[in-house]
Length: 271
Ligand SMILES: Nc1ncnc2c1ncn2[C@@H]1O[C@H](COP(=O)(O)OP(=O)(O)OP(=O)(O)O)[C@@H](O)[C@H]1O
Image (cartoon, rainbow, N blue to C red; front, side, top):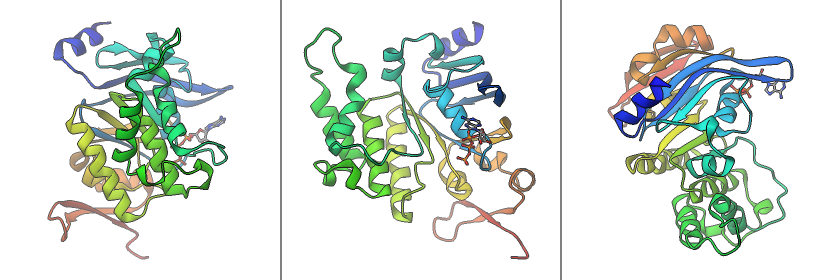
């Protein structure tokens, strides 16, 4: 396809989603979504509850098979890759983590190395280093020897992030990664993600916190009713009009008195 050749020619293209349709049973949940996520950047998927953010991430991750559409990353057709090859490129941290895994944290993180295990026996020589580095990066090394089921929600989220980092993906998909984190941990996570983008990782993350997305994401994609309604840089895309239409709340850009950066203030004037 011509757009994939274009992506190759540009050297290191990001994620390109075209005409994505996802059906579950007879119900169509995503109706021809199209957007790009720049390489080496954080793109936030925004939108109200039930808009389709998780469904889109699941389709990109290969958990759901799209009914139609094209998904390319780095100029490669993701849908044409074998599962193992896709898993070496794309990692996904889902929103709800199973709570009853009867295994230790380190073993959960080791699952991220599955795509690198030699097919015909032998050992994945890169595993110990990758697992240790991922535990440290996700600030999960302090509970590496504990049972996964004994962890708090925020700790579990760090472990699932560590598992995804152990996979050494070039595209990292995150579904609401901050939802169990306290305010310091949220900002710390964004710093960590920023470190990874500066080393070339492309990150696409569903976020509910519009202010956090406005401050930290390089680009935003706004989803409503299974459709992309706007996309682009946060400052120019998240207009007060768009936010009112999509979320029904009042918004205003102002200056954050703490950071000095543009800040999105939200609320209902009468509340
Ligand atoms: N397996 C399913 N069968 C039927 N409907 C589904 C299924 N999975 C999701 N949906 C519906 O599809 C829509 C989109 O769901 P999705 O989880 O993608 O939304 P979301 O934007 O991630 O929402 P949230 O912000 O609440 O996590 C919702 O209306 C949801 O109820």
